[in-house]
Image 1: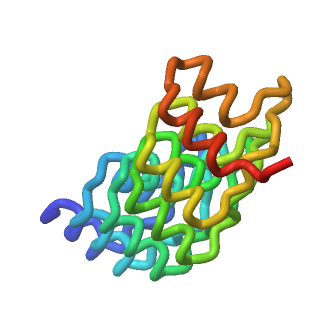
Image 2 (image 1 turned 180 degrees about the vertical axis):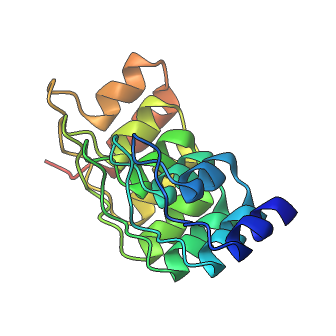
Length: 178
């Protein structure tokens, strides 16, 4: 922190990028370094730049489950939009099983049924990774159980393919009655 403050005092550009677009804020968010994120944000680091993968600092913090960093980035205007592949902070949190972040994003009106380039929804990625608590959270907020991905698989199909029968059963109970 002392070295970073010294660099900032020397007017170092806190938004400087590596060739792939990664900034110091990306690294700090990805590593869960709350103190560095705070210093960078207070020094004027921008929250919206994305790296070559389209990932912002908020997306990286979401995947890591760093709730305090997510809160700081949202307070500074971090976007709930997706990256170049369509993955949103909600997708990342659901994929990694961070139920508290999932709820936070839903409270911030994230698109619960957002689709990636291959039509994966947050419900699908939570189901395929066995995150029952996240699946229940998404269902509580009325996630649609009917979409199918680019390969024709539903969230239930993904759960069954990974041996998650408890999740598959929860999805059947939540599905619209025909």
